[in-house]
Image (cartoon, rainbow, N blue to C red; front, side, top):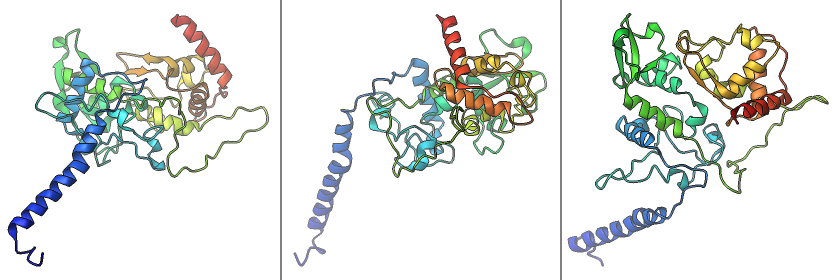
Length: 334
């Protein structure tokens, strides 16, 4: 063994043996183990449009700036209700075809936000389309590149009934007499983004992040309902469209500051819009509802934030009022 460093056959053989052992331990065994992974009961397989959108997501190399992994650290609870697990990737890890392996969607950079739960944070079709056409329309400070090749500028006389018009404000369109139409690729990509919703864990609804901090529970006077932070909920669910200062985006999303609906003494219309969404085309884009996403307390907290901010001054909404309207809305849907 004294001449180990001089025996080239022994050196190469040892290096090759080490490479094979490490490859088996680090790559092959985990690869076989992950094949046994099963989807969570609440997960749904991708539709044809969502699967096409996944492939466009990979083609555009969105993974270079966005992650899809909620790490088991407390700062990541912004991106999901729990840390990610292998089952979350069951459908996205399927091979693209015989020759190509499934794409790696985890990512390693967060130049942009994590997209694990973006389908819940941003459920609206119009928001995503505006964001792809020019991110600065909805996020003024965004450094994300635009994707104009996913859209087409058409003269109004040439627009077909099947075309999906995107409510882009006029100042963001180079031509004064044309409108923006989303291509099928753009629609498929948005379908995929809307499908990204973190599935609930069965039998373990309260998975904590590590390290876990003590929650600062809000206090209330006797007889008052304890509500979540309305400003935080608004920023997470509404500000991207209606802006942090409630000013909205002309031609895309209405302003909330000074809105007659927000300041109405009867909050029913406001609560129903938050629950059911609203279609104000062609003046504004379509808003998706939060009926299945937000609780009565969360809707009340958002409504109260809107009714007491940016110069608005209206009576507070209670969770009981939201509950009554939710029951009424469900009765209409039956």
